[in-house]
Length: 186
Ligand SMILES: CC(C)(COP(=O)(O)OP(=O)(O)OC[C@H]1O[C@@H](n2cnc3c(N)ncnc32)[C@H](O)[C@@H]1OP(=O)(O)O)[C@@H](O)C(=O)NCCC(=O)NCCS
Image 1 (cartoon, rainbow, N blue to C red):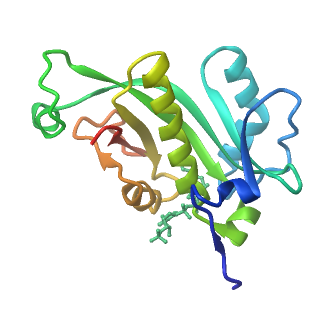
Image 2 (image 1 turned 45 degrees about the vertical axis):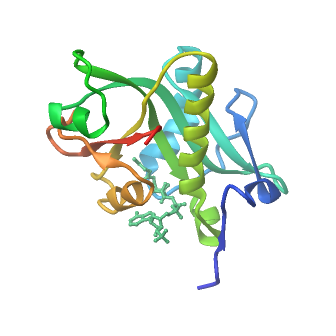
Image 3 (image 1 turned 90 degrees about the vertical axis):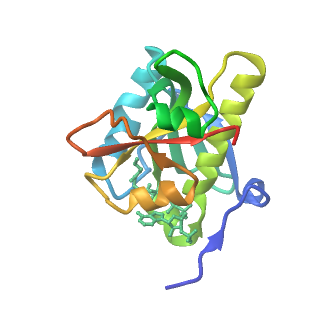
């Protein structure tokens, strides 16, 4: 196997640019290992954008314009246990804390073979969007995700390596997904 180039926040601009999904952008060449995630990008992402259900960001290659990765961001609120609230220094009487959520994230298989760190870069990009939101528009303390362990149990490790912690209050009790959070300010 050839050596994969590591993509970081420092070198990402040499190879890729981030842009918003638009109806004009051809997305059909994107292919990750999970068919459901390809289908979402081809069929549902534009509809979700128009209905203000999810906003999708694309990481595109400078050279070819091809989509290397995508993520869909939405607003969220998470329930934390008393212990979790204490852990984050959030001793407020309300049950939920505002968050931004990565509703979908996928990296194209061809790009995964050539580069590592694209998924982690996308998480960093989501953190950047959450900071922008906090700075200018509305508050979000956490970045959240429902890690899709139905398709790949290893994805939990990927999110843990990127600083996410499983929530005690699991939103999905059948455990096809694990609700996770990352404190944006600790
Ligand atoms: C999961 C996914 C986004 C990871 O993207 P990626 O570009 O391969 O991830 P990175 O290269 O940034 O990986 C960061 C670290 O996590 C690890 N990691 C990534 N995916 C992993 C997996 N599936 N299982 C175990 N570890 C994984 C990497 O080995 C790397 O570890 P290291 O820093 O010790 O070298 C990508 O594999 C993907 O699109 N999968 C299909 C769709 C999917 O599962 N999306 C998430 C749904 S919630």
